[in-house]
Length: 301
Ligand SMILES: Nc1ncnc2c1ncn2[C@@H]1O[C@H](COP(=O)(O)OP(=O)(O)O)[C@@H](O)[C@H]1O
Ligand SMILES: [Mg+2]
Image 1: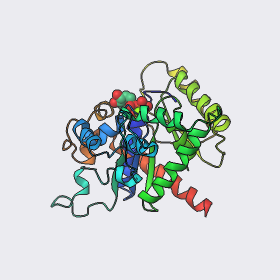
Image 2 (image 1 turned 120 degrees about the vertical axis):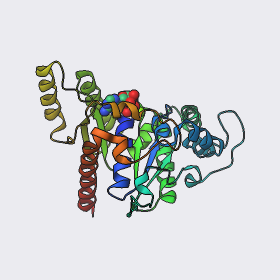
Image 3 (image 1 turned 90 degrees about the vertical axis):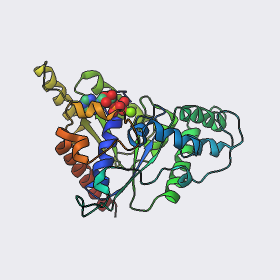
Image 4 (image 1 turned 45 degrees about the vertical axis):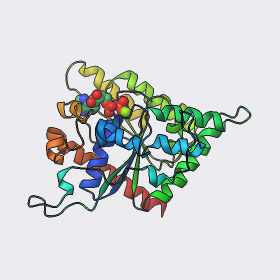
C-alpha cells in the first residue's frame, strides 16, 4: 500500500534473477500508472514505442471497454497482443564467446503508461452496478485471469507490480495472486501500512484466504542510527508476520538508486554489472522465492 518502499525495484530484481538464474519465463504486469517497472525494463524511448503500437496494459483495458480514454473507438485486443515479450537485454541472455550457455528463461512485460489510471477509472464507471463497488475488481480480475491464460505458457511466472494505495487494478492483481510479497522499509509507518494492508486489505476487503502465502521483506535497509528502535521494529514484524518473512534483505545502495531510471533501450549490460554489490542479495532473494513457489506448487498438487 505504501509508496517508495521498493515494490518496483524488488519486482525488477526478482524478474531478472528468476529469468536468468532459474531459467524461468517471467512476465512483469505493471499495475502502476507511474510506470516505474516499465521504464526500468523498456526505458522512456521503448515505452513510447510500446504506446504507439498499443502494446500496453492501458490499451488492453481500453479495448475491453471498446474505446480509448481519448474517446476513439478501440478494436478488441487479445492480452498477448498488448504484451512486450522477451525484452531483457542483459547480455547473459545472449549467446557469445563470453556466454556459452544463454538462459532458457525470458523476461516479458505488460507495460503501464500514465493512461492506465484513466483506463482503469473508465473501467470502474463501466462496471459499477447498483452501487456495488466490488463488481469492477471482480470483472477485471476475471478478465486478467482469462487474458493471461491465453497469453502465457503454463510455466510462466507473472509478477504484478502494484501501485501505492489500493486501486482496482491492484485489487484485481491481488485476487489472482498465488503468493503475495510485501516489501517494507525499516520504519514504523511502513510496518503500520503493511499490517493495515494484510488485515483490512487482503483479509477483510478482498477475503483472500490464509492459504495464499503472504510474505514480508525488508528493502533499503540502512545500518545507521536508532539501533534499539530497529530491533523493536523487527520484533514487532516477526510477531505480526508469524515467520512469513523473506530472509534476504536488500540494503540501501547506489545500485538500488540507479535502477529507477533506464536511460536507453540498450543501456543494460550484464547482471553482475547491473547489480554490483547487491548481486548476491538479489540471487539469494530469487533462490528463496523460487523455493517458496515450488514448495507451494507441490502442496497444491
Ligand atoms: N536498495 C535500494 N537502495 C537505494 N535506493 C533504492 C533501493 N531500492 C529502491 N530504491 C529507490 O527508492 C525509490 C523507490 O523505490 P521503488 O522500488 O520505486 O518503490 P515503490 O515501487 O514501492 O514505490 C526509487 O527511487 C528507487 O531508486
Ligand atoms: Mg512502484
